Image (tube, rainbow, N blue to C red; front, side, top):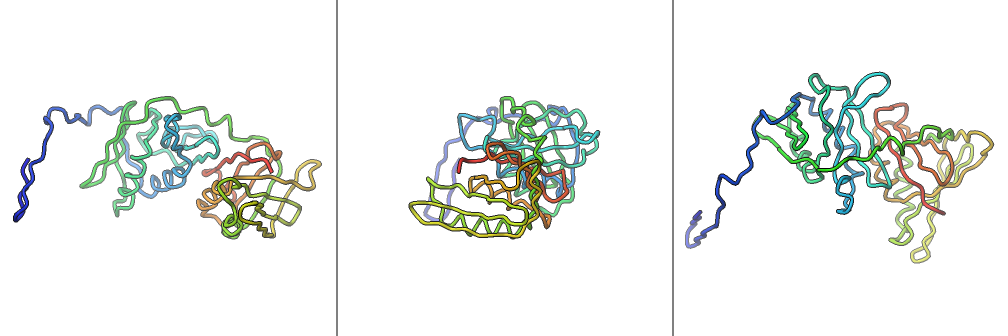
Length: 279
């Protein structure tokens, strides 16, 4: 291929057109449409938890599938890096029942975000076991899916955490951000010290300094636990807090060594899990 402009001349090598992969519409097992706002929420609230570790390639994306919830089926997106997990549900679109679960690759998820920013009201979704396609008038994104099996994420979602913390989501996010400014690469842990009406967030990083801040909260300690001290990675808390749309965030704990479950108020269509750190 030749490109000429003024005194500049370029000759570019090409490949045979027969080598370009065919993407026929008939290759898909399921075709359905979903509101753009619904897909935007599903992927925006889950993508932060995708893994970047090449060795765990099956976590390098968002797992989109049909799942059961409260006696009905939902369209669910899940992502995890082994330290944090996001599970987001939406009403199952017509025609999506029985679709194969697919892991949408990280790069495709990021490219999809530009499509979801469009003014189009609905996105056409086509899914097979090997590829996925998102289409709007004038633009179509087609991607291979990540080969491999997404792990049984339900096994790490706590079911018996009985210690409940309710806190203003925005104030919590701001407090984590402030105390995390003194954390370092080797000391990323934020300590949460809980009592009945108070949450103290603190960081102790020998290389940079210390910080602490208190928030008024509602804490129901559960059986025989008047107070609780836990530690979490500052970045994970910041990322999860950044997803909150509701006024209050609800944390459910069991012990300081077990994962915490986080919800946006009483909304059970968006839940997050974060693993603790030793303090």
